[in-house]
Each structure stands twice: as structure tokens, then as C-alpha cells.
Amino acid sequence: MLKMSIIYHSETGNTKKMAELIKEGALEVTGVEVSLMAQDQLDRAFLDESQVILFGSPTYYGTMSWQMKKCMDTLPVKVEGKLGAPFASAAWPGGGGYELTEMALIQGMLIRGMIVYTGGVVTGRPPTHFGAVSHKAPEGFDADRCRKLGKNLALKGQELFGKSKGQSTDLV
Ligand SMILES: Cc1cc2nc3c(=O)[nH]c(=O)nc-3n(C[C@H](O)[C@H](O)[C@H](O)COP(=O)(O)O)c2cc1C
Image (cartoon, rainbow, N blue to C red; front, side):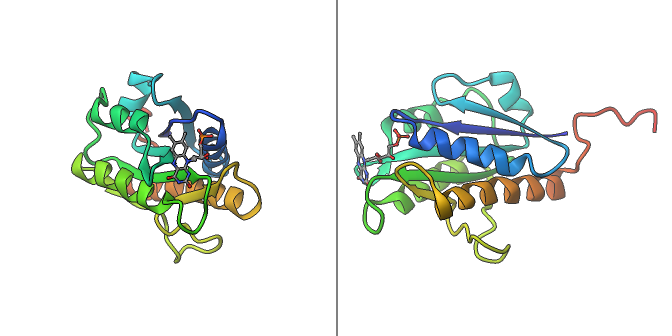
């Protein structure tokens, strides 16, 4: 079973809704278990066992929120070698800075030795570029992009880590 943690910070629900849609997309792939975690309520054991970890943040003054930065700076588990991707919401598309938020999250992932992947523009529609972005609450295309990101990460996770990690294969 591939385990995926989706960590988010959300004050008014937009980024949380993105996390829920990403989970929906990931669960389109069989053999995947997903846990949603608010940034201040991490499930340490599940996080430790997760092969895939996504980080989501609202855009605060053109970058990730301080709450998400604190979460990343104080992660209670090692994440090196795990697969990851970012997602971000903002109030102002086309200049509000959600891609900068994603790049800040990507920096945090790379520095901790994670493997960053989104599927980009080569895995079909909608394209996921730097991750999933949403203008306020995700709807329509933004919602589809969240689901697609979840599915892309689940498929790539299985490709990299196998479908049966965590299950005993001693008897087969
Ligand atoms: C302190 C603060 C700073 C913000 N800065 C930006 C910003 O730079 N660009 C932008 O587009 N939206 C900005 N916003 C709006 C939020 O990114 C947006 O409403 C987001 O969807 C909130 O996510 P949430 O519902 O998950 O809390 C800011 C909001 C707050 C509270």
C-alpha cells in the first residue's frame, strides 16, 4: 500500500479544500492510502511511513504562510528520498504569487532531500506546471488540477516505490 500524506495550512478553507480534492484524485488509483493533516496536527507515525508527502499553503505576501514555513522548519520526521509536490491558493490570480509560494515549498522539499514531481504538462490535462494552484476556493479547472496532481503523485509513487511496500511478502 502506498501511503500519501497531504499537509496543508488553511485559515479560511480554500487550501484545505484543495487538499481534499488532491486526496480524491489520489484515491482514483488503487492501492493508495491518504491522510490529510493540518500543519499543526501532524500524524507523525503516518508521515514517517508515507512515501509521498504534499505540502499546501495559502499565499501570504507572495510566499508561503509563516505557519507552513514553521511546519516545514520543524518537521518531526526525516523526509529525504520521499516524493513530494506543492499546492497553493491565492486571492489574486495572475500576479498574486501562488507560483512563488509553490517555489518556496519546492525549495523546502529539495533542501530536505525530497524528490519533487508534479507531472507538469506532459501527463495530460489539466497540466500541473509547478503543482496545483487555485484562485480562492478551487472550482472547475482548478479543482480538476488538484485531482490530477493527486493522481499523478499516486502513480509516480507506485512507479518509484512499488505497490506493495509496507505489506509482508514473506509468504509469496
Ligand atoms: C496575511 C495574508 C496575506 C495574503 N497575501 C496574499 C498575496 O500576496 N497574494 C494573494 O493573491 N493573496 C494573498 N492573500 C489571500 C490568501 O492567499 C487567499 O485568500 C487564500 O485562498 C487563503 O487560503 P485559506 O482559505 O486556505 O486560508 C493573503 C491573505 C492573508 C491573510
